[in-house]
Image (cartoon, rainbow, N blue to C red; front, side):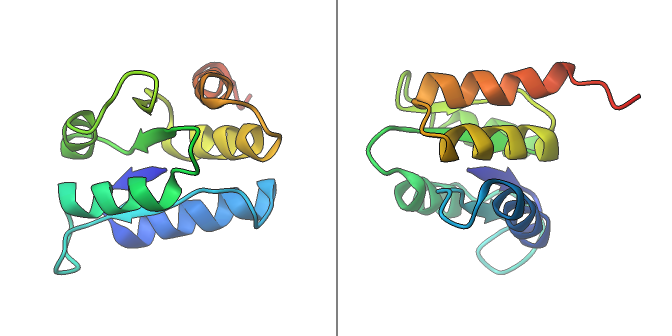
Length: 120
């Protein structure tokens, strides 16, 4: 699940991840505030967690700053886990792992591997 200050950014990153990993991957966007502004809404994130959770838990990938702090409020060890990863690269890696049927720990590990991928 992607947590961003911007609804548009979160939704576009989800579209990219689904485009690479497949449309059936359970990835959800939680971006912005209730009134459509920039920020991080715990209520939007909570609803998105419920939408994303298919019984195996949820990996939260925040963009920066207060979205990280807000996402941390929802952490539940072994059920709702926070990934300290690059937003786009982590999202794509997590989506591919999830689409491949990996359990929560495997999805988190795949996302975390994205932190070390070099582009050049």
